[in-house]
Length: 231
Image (cartoon, rainbow, N blue to C red):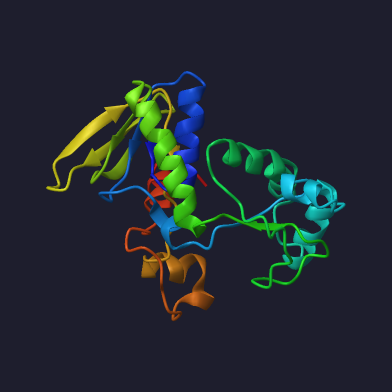
């Protein structure tokens, strides 16, 4: 079961289905997309196809150093290293699924403190461009019987047994609950920008900021994981 049909959830569902799993995607909205529908769609990768075509010298280590500098050293180094090493292969995977990146890139991105090397590429159609392509890929796997989508379904609680997560309790649009069982559950629904209490708890400096997040970004993944004992 994948909870959340945004960019992360769709990528996870497609990958799991291609690895041989039987996948059920659950989302409380009536359509896929999540927060990606309001995202710009830029993607930074060292060693991307566009960099190679323009003979821009770069490496995952330089990307790591740049990102660590911009983040003032506050990032988890293991996670940042994983991201910078896997960014280019991931971008190529996205391209193989039909996502197109603007040939004018890569660029220096003024959205944040500048990298020392142009490595930011822009997906055509922005965030919705990712969802359009990944939605088509999910549809293919649904047609092949490898996946299913359950929309307008709210995930409420993780089900545990013997110290393992064995499923999730969900509710339909009328509030009727049922338990879905699975060998594994992936939570891809942690955005909390529209949950004022969570913003005050996790990011109090933004408590009074203007919110442009999806109304569905209420931190369900964080809440369910904490209730099941996660840190």
